[in-house]
Every structure is written in C-alpha cells, then in structure tokens.
Length: 386
Image 1 (cartoon, one colour):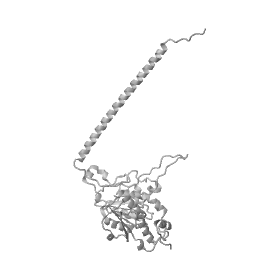
Image 2 (cartoon, helix red, strand yellow; image 1 turned 90 degrees about the vertical axis):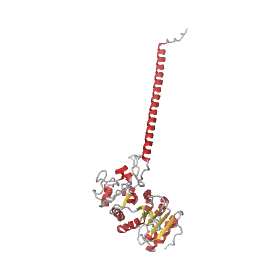
Image 3 (cartoon, helix red, strand yellow; image 1 turned 30 degrees about the horizontal axis):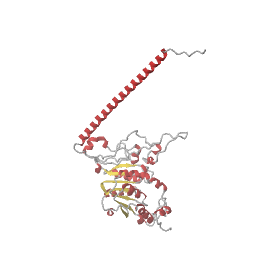
Image 4 (tube, rainbow, N blue to C red; image 1 turned 180 degrees about the vertical axis):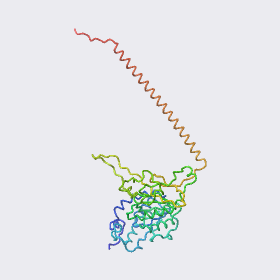
C-alpha cells in the first residue's frame, strides 16, 4: 500500500478520477441557476469533493454541510470501478481530498459530517438548499428525499444528480424515487434533464397570489412534458396533456423512452460536401420533466416556471397601490412621444426628398438649356491655309 498523499496534486496522480466525470462537471452547473446565492446549504454524497468545490464557488453560502460516511465504510469503499480505482482508493484519502478541494473558501463555515444520512441531529438550522448525490437505489433514495425535505426551510430547494429516465440505466432508481416523491403532492419540479440534474420546490411556498392569478390566469399552469418523458415516468395521457405532435419524440426514434438524455450532448456545426461551413447545429432547450398525477382532492396549482431555460423561479408579488395606474400613464406618455418622433422624422424625410427632387430638376433643366444653345450657335470655321 503506497504512503498517503501529501498534497491534492499527488492524490490525483496516485488515484486519478474518471475523465468522463471531470468532463461532465461543467455540464452539471446549469442546475445552480435555480438556487439562491448565500444562506446555508448541504451536500449529501461528497466523495472526493469535486462538485463540492463548484457548489461553494457558484452558490457562495454562508455555511455549508458536507455529509458522507467516508471512513465509516471501512478502509476502502468495497466496490470496484473507475471511481475507486478498482477499490484501491482509501476512504481516508477521499475524505482528505474533499477538505483540500474546499479549503480555499475560507469565508465559508464548512462542516464535514462523517455520518450516514439521515442525521438530522448534525444540523443546527434550516437549510436553504440541499444537493443529493448519495444512494442510487429506489427505496434508499426515497427515504433520503423525505429526510432532506424535513431539513429544508419553507422555500428551500432540493436538487441533485443521477436523473436517468432510461429504465435500463444504472441510476433509474433515482428517477423513480424523485417522481414518486413529487406524486405525493407537496413538491413540484422546477427542472430536470441535462447531465442528470433535477430540482424541486414546495408547492405551498410558491403558491401565486390572488392578484397574480387574476392578471396572468393560464400562464400559471404547470408546464407539460414531452410524450416520451411522460411515458418513461409512467404518467398517463389523461393525467398530463401532451403538447405539439403526439406520439413523436423531438429527438427521434433512437431516443424514444430516453427522456432528456440526448440534450446533454453539445451541438456540432454542420458542413457540406465541399467541407465549407454550413448552418450551425441548433441545441434546443430541454423539456420539462413529467408532472406527478394529481391526487383527489387535487393540490393547488403551483407557480410554475416558464419554458425559458435556464430560469430562476420567483414568487408573484402584489403591486403597490397606484402602481398599476402609474405604469399605464408612463406607457401612454412613452407611446405619444414615440408617435411624435415618428411624425417629425417622416416630415423631415419628405422635406429632404422634395429638396433633392427640386435640385435634380434644376440641374436637368440647366443641362438641357446648355445643350440647346450649343446646337443653335454657328460653328466657327477653321482658317484656310494659303
């Protein structure tokens, strides 16, 4: 057994992390756009701290908990594969790597919790966000979701990794557990899909106000998912209406039943036969994940995020007294000003055109007079030579 590494660089050299996971790190960052900066957060399932570093850098929390059993599992993790270097990676090295990767964030109160989740006694205050990347089995993930929900503040965001709609996927148990958790009625999807990321929020905490319901109406309806995504989640057509062309997945037959897995591939520029660049490939925004079938009685309609992606959802707010009238007056004044400017610009254009036409006509007339005079004038004969 080699001696323990003395630095993070030496640890990465002795126990290299899978290259495909390092390439996937930037693709996972889009889900952080749905989480408010600052506050208190937690990551459950830290391993060597690669995504912990990204959470601290982009979310800038005041305090962060990092929960993982690490050395409680033994000297080694007990399973082979690229993540553990065929079970040669010591658990103590993974624990030390997580600390090394986050030590540059000195302004953050970092709490490393070496325990098996759930461990509610290790948290001092409600969490503003919790990132779940621990178990990949259905029953264990469902229990972790319930425990995580109890730790979050009313507007806390619960999000995580390993969203796999493909029934043959290794992490499909996470997909099933998250959908089952949402079907119970207290939580709604915010977004899910690319690079296996997903995010949830409480329905009651994001309920729209009465004014928002009156002003926006149907715009507050929950988003709908594509047919293939809904079928992968087990949703029926009666539960969630399908938009667009029914029965046809936007990614084609090869991706039928795969949900959003095809969206995490980068777009490529197309070229013609001569090798010249053609129209660039388009990358369409991901569909929203399947909605949970409503139970009876149905829970209230949630304030759903619009289809623009990525988007940070925010609650609707009542306008201040007189704000609507003031806004209408400002819009009317702007409209009148714009109309006046348009009329002035049109008049100036007509005047300039008239002047140009007059000048052209005068020039043409002068040229005609000169031509006529040259024709009527007698020609001078050259003197004859003697």
